[in-house]
Image (tube, rainbow, N blue to C red; front, side, top):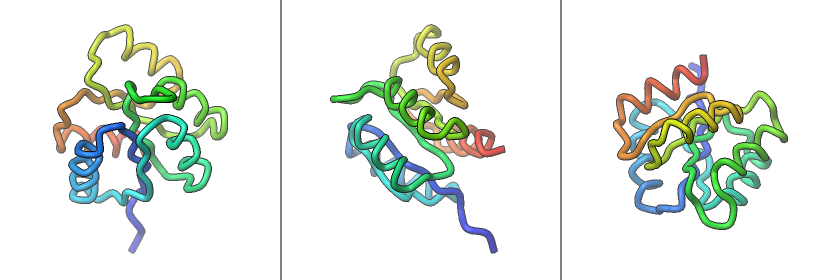
Length: 122
């Protein structure tokens, strides 16, 4: 039996992290760490090296775009999926250009999230 893919969940909303964590587990993932801002996200990535990162864009201290760049500088093969309520095409394209594997919009659709994360692993 193989272990489930590991996920670092980054969002400044504790309520969203709780909801997403439950949805991730139900979809067959293991949440190995959570972060409330981009600085914590980079620290947790460095410590845990998860299979995937689910990253909010708008966070205090260090936003998701900056954290995305820092994580990819640590590990160019990192798989980061951006999660945000910002839906502008320019934001989506910028995240993909920076190296995100995909982009999900809030509110989270559990089935779409599971499919996008599994695709990011492929």
